[in-house]
Length: 240
Ligand code: CDP
Image (cartoon, rainbow, N blue to C red; front, top):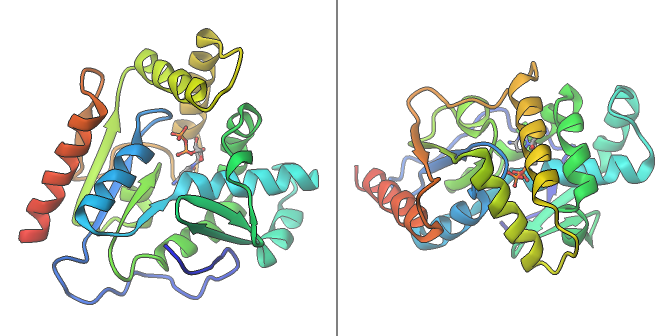
């Protein structure tokens, strides 16, 4: 995705796509650490569709609110910030008002805060419109509510999951690979379970499998096997 995404842009309320078979929408939802971003990014590249990482957008908003000292119960202050706040995803990086914040959004602090901001209607409304505006040429989008709320008309909807223990292990490996020290498995497992509970129990757009989705339990699959499975499913739909 190369164009600017302005979180205040709510001009697009529905996806208006040209009727071309290769411009399909693929949604990948699921709990924390299921491998959605890795799978969605790789599958999008193989299929030749843009990739939208909606978790990064929610993380970008949480980063900004936290930086400004705005709590999740301060709705009007949040709305004020969101009217001018500009997020842009480019080459796998996230820019906030032109500044690269990629290394600031996947920290333990943002992990802890993001779901609380993501449960707020002010934040969800701003980001849902923004996400829909990105789908004109088809896309692969991953998150929590892609198949249920944002793109219920998607050609292919996948719910990616794995046991909490396996997801915590993957999240620990990711952090160690990023060079983090003192990664504690029990603490990561506790946070993964807590964030899932928060995302599943919220009132707006709770995490759950979309109607008509394909559920992929990846506990005993390698990431390559999951990418292959998603890619071949998408190619089937592109041929239809
Ligand atoms: O990568 P991981 O699964 O840990 O999380 P993420 O996809 O980066 O999403 C971070 C958080 O943003 C989630 O725990 C949700 O609270 C929120 N989120 C959401 O509410 N809706 C989305 N479509 C995507 C993320």
